[in-house]
Length: 242
Image (cartoon, rainbow, N blue to C red; front, side, top):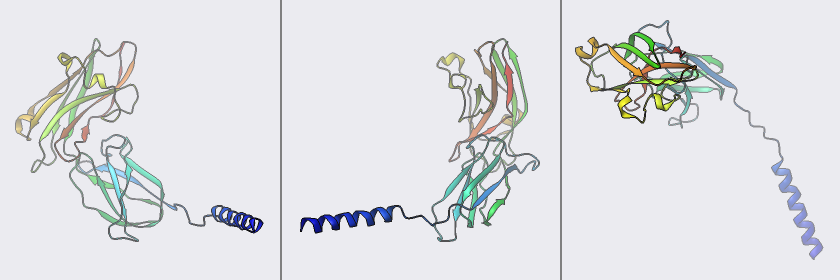
């Protein structure tokens, strides 16, 4: 009897092992989606952002009217790409960035599909300039609002400094944005609705105590009080501190 039970257990084990090692014939991802996020005020230029500064939301409608969304993060140059998608019919919406909401687009993603989106930034930084005074970086700028009606309250201007070209709210040396010494505070609080006074103001942002002999990369960001509080950015400048 014991031999019969033992043989039966061995047989079950072999069957279980065979089932576990069975080849998975389900096809893998067979499509990709890429494109550019364009500034609608000048569609020759990509939308100025940072890594993950915008999310491209994808909802596959092939199997469900209420699918679980997936997201493609933006790249620093304002492009996006995901080559590990399943082909199908999608609803696509750029979201979670510093721009006016846009309507979703429905399209088929098969093979490598390309589609660009035009975005209107909440604010634009213009007349941006910089200079170095000793170990202090001084950046000056003006603000422009492409659309003023309904614009959320402007919160603040912040400098971002890093030792690589990847620089923004998600990649920076924190002591240069929020120094522990409050006398060296360099965030400019605005906390106001858009006005002629803001449009006519030249803002000056100072970042002191840059380390001598180092190369830094810097930019300024401005944000409004929407759901995401992301930044509209200036260009990135390289700073060599002698």
